[in-house]
Amino acid sequence: MVYLIIMVGVIPFCVWTYYADSSKFGENDVMYDTYSWYHFTLNEHTLVKSLPEVVAGSAEFRKRNVPKSAEDKAEIAQLMSLVKSQMQKPKFNHPVCVKGNVLMHSHLLRKSGSIKNPLLLEDLKNMLKVSSSLVDAMISVCKHQDSLQTAMNCIEFGQLVSQAMWVKDSTLLQLPHFTPEEIKHCEKGKGKASTILEYRDIPDDQKKGMATFTDEQKKDVFNYLKMLPDITVESKVFVDDDEDDKVYEGDLCTIRVTITRNNLKEGEKAGLVHAPLFPYPKQEAWWIMLGTKEGKIISIEKVGDPSRVVEHSIKFLAPRVGEYEFDLYVKSSAYVGLDQAQKVGLVTLDNTSLPEYKIHPEDAALDDEPTLFEEILNANIEQDSDDDSDDDESEDEDDEPAIAPKSDAALKKEQLKKARQANTEDDDSDDDDDDEVEEVYAQK
Image (tube, rainbow, N blue to C red; front, side, top):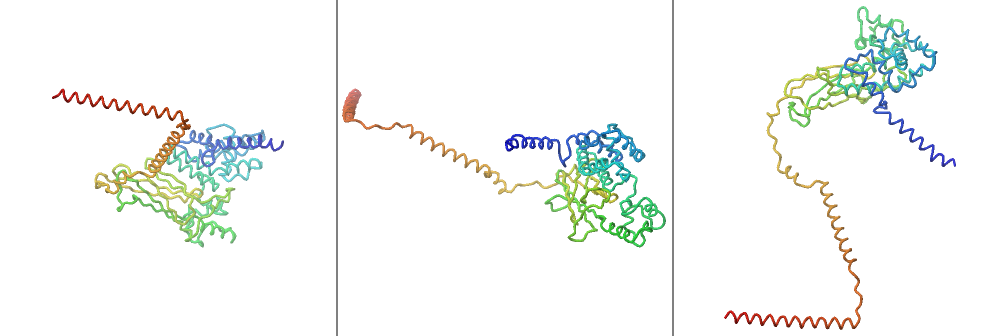
């Protein structure tokens, strides 16, 4: 009885539940309702400041982030008083959006320590757990909308979420043990540094902001600066299998982007991102984008190859004759202040100046030869026709009636019949001869 219940009830129910849930999710395990929400809220004018509210309205949080009691609402209101000054004016007043927006800002402003309710902390961790996939989904929507600037804003928002920073924070806040007080000291006086790249280039014995640090804390800062990605970006424009570097209208053009991690030695690979305030591990990756000066997207891809030298090819058809300048962006998925941008020039020539392409006779003869599919098809047709003929012959043989043995009387009757037919034929032949003779004499 138990076996019957399991086979008839439990297993079908589990299968139905699995397919019912999986049908709600699209790429990157993001719900289709979330993609619809992003298409509705994202546009070419979307700013980084408005993205926490966009993430808060994702379908993944619509059940969990509903305030369940008056106490929850009171705690959200109290937390909002701490972050409201840094929040953009909300566009949506739904309780789910409000709660998620406040929780996300508490993380970005590094005030999540003020959350006393462990359930709210779990809700925040749940949002951060899927934040990377949601950011990727927003970028895919921007790609569909052909909005380059909004896509870059989404990437920068992903960086801020990883480092628990907000739009006006200094990039030096990513350094271990650094607070706004240490950053103020670094930005003043001789040998000052306002960005993390400037701070890295300063000799260790001249770096500011660590006067009160212990030797262990200073060591953490130095080790962090050694592992911080230091990349060089190079690009090359060419056409595959062409002897020269010229590009003609309609060619399949390739821009090869080479990223070299100078902080790694030969054979080393990039590891996890240093993000101590992000509760989940995150692998280092880079977004490579190519766009026009009008802000249209030609290509946008996320490259997660951890090798020291990474090559990425962008292919597209060469535009009309003329000179073009494209914008190439290489942006980190998790670090703030390491992005690079450069111009890529392209000169497209008139393809009518190319020599006429002539087909080799041997290549032209290949068009007359049957393809592998045609050979297989013809072989099957011949085999079918042979089988049909064999079947027809066998059917004819089967249709022939069996010859029964004749009796002696029947044999005698048959012999007499044949003899009579023979005599009749002889008489007819004699009559024919006489007619011929009469005709001969008549002619004479």
